[in-house]
Image 1 (spheres, rainbow, N blue to C red):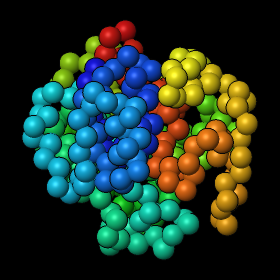
Image 2 (image 1 turned 45 degrees about the horizontal axis):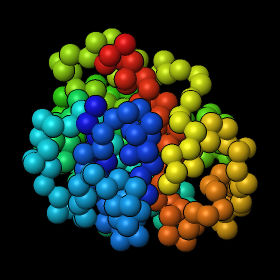
Image 3 (image 1 turned 90 degrees about the horizontal axis):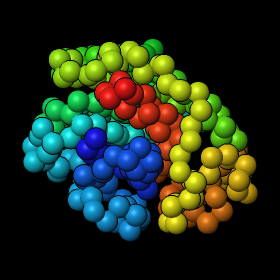
Image 4 (image 1 turned 45 degrees about the vertical axis):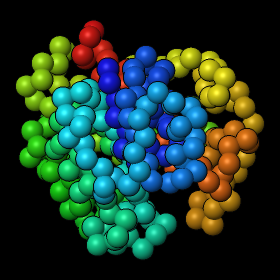
Length: 248
């Protein structure tokens, strides 16, 4: 499976893809610090900057799965919740890239607030946009604690499958049949990938809103990295099911 990661942050989706044995062909990320992390840890992937300047046509027909944790600030309950009127609303840029690349699978991630803002109309539009591009769409609220993380962290995961692409065992609706146990590789050197979250000391988030334990190891630069990551164990669970649907 060939992977393209949009809004890739510090590489959570790419790490989960590596656990699956998939290849991250390219990533798109505007933050300079995150770019350094990605260049170090995924040196074989081609890097791109601002998604608003990214031309996905070069990857048309070459990508099996496209991922993206598009910016959450327009929807987060910790912000002003301006939705699609926020300058950081970049779903349209992600949709344009999907249209250009035409991947078989799309996995998008965002905060729970995406499902409630404007009485769910923004969320409904995003799902409809995907359907209008020819995808079957199924969304799930999956908390980090579902993969044994020491914090709740509800997130909405949007999984889309291109109809007519010949998936062996069904469609995107079956993504909910993911296995109950995740077994990513133990330790790859530059990454710490514990099977059990209790394998490392955790610290508290300096957050005036929630103050939850974020589950990240102490050596992660929280000022630069926190908020630019997904929980890769959750992505791995989704990827594992996609793999089974394609090849199982």
